[in-house]
Length: 328
Image 1 (cartoon, helix red, strand yellow):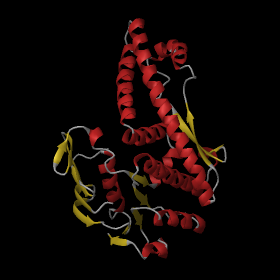
Image 2 (cartoon, rainbow, N blue to C red):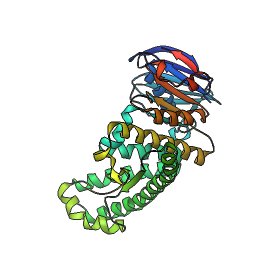
Image 3 (tube, one colour):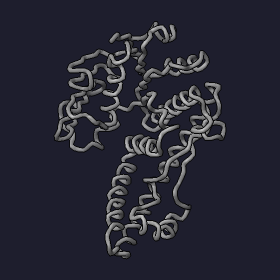
């Protein structure tokens, strides 16, 4: 459980200290008061992903976690000691965050879905992170080789074999991840009494990956880039076996993403043995009473949850009675 949050020069906050030692923390305030920024600071510590020029974020939980961002890069600390490898820092505090921007998983570009897979799997599986790092390096080398005027086909073949090896590893782990989420999603959909949700991995190659690359060689030589591979794969979100990007309403889309994030929370708990902190940004907006009641049950059964709202009245009274409410 998170106990204290300290933020310096992060987005709108020059200096903010919050005591959050409670199972349910509600951040209430008008738009642009910094509610989402606080959730993003927590998420930042969990993932170490940032786009800031300078900031300091520190969280007190079982230990003290600190991230300092500057123009020269980022520095990570646990209990005051610097951590040199990002892989040894990320995932120490596991969080699952729902944000309205996550609707891009349904309607956004394919890259949004790949980022979702890569981020979650890299945090939970260091072998995935390693394979992904190797794949990106080899992919860059292969693309550079393709751009040459006189392509060395033998060298290209060596790079392709290495790329295929890591492609198999990464695709297998992604598919296993989505299949595990599907099992959990089935239970969540039944529990929330909503339409069936399923995640389907979309490959850009056949079962024989090496053969697929061989058949694509002439095209790659013409376009001077690698046209297939896990860097071009994505996944579909199906609602009652129909493509959610084409058939889901706004309300359904919001419910789908919430269900996926709840499934991810359960998956992380199963894998790590520790329940992640649940961050819900404006989660109750545009939901009917039945959906709100379902989410309320999940919140009550969680170890720690942060919820943002512009109107405290939209928070169910059942939650408010045990909540720490912070007005911004």
